[in-house]
Each structure stands twice: as C-alpha cells, then as structure tokens.
Image (cartoon, rainbow, N blue to C red):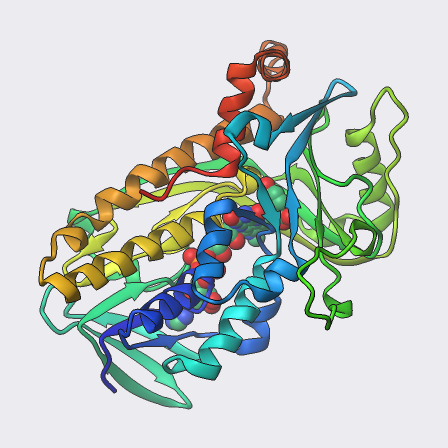
Length: 408
Ligand code: RFL
Ligand code: PHB
C-alpha cells in the first residue's frame, strides 16, 4: 500500500489531520489499532478552545458541535467555601470555550472520513516506523492477521502516549522532560443534570474536585436548528483527586457523592444533585514533552509527543494545534516547493506546547493538595487563589491560558 502521508492513530490528532489533508487534496491512510466502537466511546476531554471550534467548523466537522455543544463564558473557582467566577469574554476580548466531548468530535470526524476521505483502517496496529531518515519512510502494520507495509512520503505519529512512532527516533537525538504527580483523577459520568451551569474547579484540604458536564449522548437531537441543547438535558461529569494508583472500584457510589459534596461545599448553601453513576475510571496525572517532535520524515503530533495533566483542559487542543501546523507546512511545501515550514514544525509546535505545559502545571499545583503538602504550601495556594479573585491582571492570565494560546 502507498500513500503520501501515513497517519498512525485515529484519536483527535490523526482524524483531524486526515481531514485537513483531504481538504487540501493530499492523500493519506490512517491506521488505528483499536476497533471503531472503542475509539468512539473512550471517555476523555470535554473542553474545546475557540481555536479548536474554528478549525472543526472550517474542515466541515462542526455541524453537530454547533447544535449540541455548549458555549461557556466562564468557570467558577471554589476554595475555602467561597466562589469566584472568572468571566472569559470580559477578560480576553470576547473569547470563550465550548463543552463538546472528545468522543463526539471523534464520531463526527470518523463519519466524515468514512464517507468521503481516504482509507481509515481499524484494528490495524502499527508495529514500527522504518526509514524515517530516508525519502521513503514506511509503517509496518498488522491487519486482518497479516503483516503489511504502508509506504509513504511522510509519516505522522498521532498514536498517543503509548504509541510506537516516537520509538523510531534515536534515543541520542531526543530529550524527554517529565513530571509525574502523586495523585490521579477518579472520573464519573452520572445521569443527573449538572448542579451548576459552568465548570467548577474546587480546591479543598481533602483534595481537588471538578464539576463538568456532557451533552446527553443517548438522546441526540435530530433537529437541524443551530441552537444549544438546554443545560437541564446534560449529564454530569465529575472528578475527584485520589491518591496515585487508586483502583476506581475501591470507591462506592455513595462514598463518591459524599466526598464530592464535602469538596464542593460553600457557605451559601449550594447543593450538589446526586444521580446514578454510569461510568467510573481513574486517570493518572503526568506532564511529558519529547523534543524534537520531528525526525527526518517522521513527525509526532498530540499525546505522542506531549502530555499535560487534565486540569487545564489542554491536551486535545494541543493535538489540534500540532496537526494544523503540520497540514499548513505540508501544503506550503506542495504549493511552493519550500520545506521551510516543515523544517520549523517542531519549534513552532513546541512554543505553544510549553505554554500549555506551564498553564496545566500552574492549574494543577494551584488546585490539588499534594500528600506531603505543608501548612505553608496550603496558605500559599489560598493566597494564589485570592490573588486571582482580587487582581484583574492575575485573573486575565488565567482566562487567557484557559481559552487558549494562539495557533501562530
Ligand atoms: P489519543 O486520543 O490517545 O489517540 C491515539 C490513537 O492512537 C491509537 N494507537 C495506535 N494505532 C495504531 N497503531 C499503534 N501502534 C497505536 N498505538 C496507539 C490509539 O488507539 C488511539 O486511538 O491521542 P491524540 O489524538 O493525540 O489526542 C490527545 C487527546 O486524546 C488527549 O490529549 C486529551 O484527551 C486530554 N484531555 C483533555 N484535553 C482537552 O483538551 N480538554 C479536556 O477537557 C481534557 N480532559 C483529557 C481530559 C484526558 C483525560 N484522560 C483520560 C487522560 C480528561 C481526562 C480524564
Ligand atoms: C471534562 O469535562 O472531562 C473536563 C473538563 C475540564 C477539565 C478536564 C476535563 O479541565
């Protein structure tokens, strides 16, 4: 099999890249190790930056997002039983974010790709990238019990944090920057409308908690009008900081609700509505960057090159930034013959990646309680939160980071 761009992985990075290339008249083949149902149901991100929304619309994948996604103009910070709302448009000259789940972004992109894009092979596991430093790199993969070779002009590794693409870059040419956190997130989906109409990020002595939401997947609106679904029809997505290595089954449903209630408690009597928990899992927290993001004709994009802890809601948005940068660079190369933008790919992406790493680290350390936190550090956290609540400059910094760093 032969193609211009071999894409490994059908997460948001790989799927969007295939779409961008298709629209630019460049052919590609996507190899995905899992089956379609698995990829469409893997619960992950929920927040899209304005830039991500714009890109999805521009590639023709915005129709359902415009109907079902919910525009959010702020978040609430909660600490010491107090509430502080951060107003994004007021602080950033009109920017906001959209609540639309990664599962739905993937479903929309998969449907488009299968309808009018190049080949997208499920249950096709890439085994290795070969000849990355030559003019004709290839991907060895297994599909329907056979080993095959995908010959390409370029290979883009969009295969996430456990993929094979990054292994093709010689160790002596790479540098890894990494930090693990001594806690994770226990995430639940619950069949109850969210208790607040915006996300709530809570800092508590017992640990962090987050209130988020999802559109009601099982009750999709068939209608065509461009109007958001009412908040009452959404389900709750909630997270609790738990010790590293926690097994989700250790937590009973009642215990989860009791703990969420403690961490979200306010002095004004705000109430958390409970409902049946339909899904429960634990996510570890990690910051990771591998540099450079390119070796010869192999490019890394998304989680394959960098991971952020989810506190800043940046992972998917960074993946989008990477593939937009790659698609632009390749289009430029095909139109002008100049490899200038491809050569600058790693540097261009990493500038934005490190800003998102910094922001995600700041949000994580602002809101989580480390198991060995000292009373001094507790007071500092509260002082940082007070600063955001009382200084427009500090609050603007948070709002700019949350709504997203520009693509260029
Ligand atoms: P993905 O989504 O992991 O996709 C990689 C794909 O590659 C496949 N694959 C292979 N295919 C073929 N051959 C191989 N050898 C392969 N090895 C792997 C995998 O099966 C998979 O389909 O990476 P991508 O595309 O880079 O996308 C990154 C995002 O998924 C990730 O950054 C976000 O989910 C992070 N994240 C969030 N990001 C946001 O922007 N906003 C959020 O609100 C947000 N919340 C979150 C999150 C991540 C979370 N978890 C579970 C880590 C909340 C959570 C809880
Ligand atoms: C989510 O809705 O899953 C979500 C929202 C905000 C985050 C992380 C995850 O920071």
